[in-house]
Length: 78
Image (cartoon, rainbow, N blue to C red):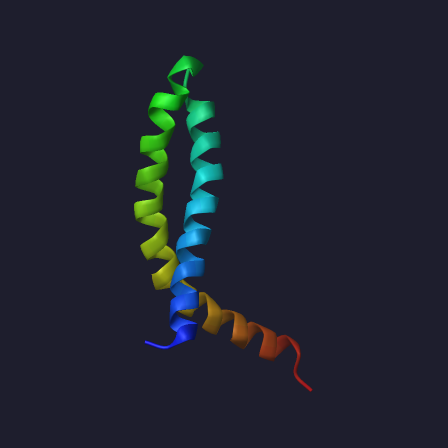
């Protein structure tokens, strides 16, 4: 595997970790009535969010990239 593939995979895992950290913390915070449970519930929610986000990013990244290329080439026709 070449260096570019490793960069894509590593960037994707970092992106899924950071994005899910923020989203899961907000959702957990908003959904709890007893906020003292936040630090017990949130890490588990974050873990499950990462398990879902990383494969989703890996699956949909190429599809979104192709769609973006088509949209930009349509909008920026010379």
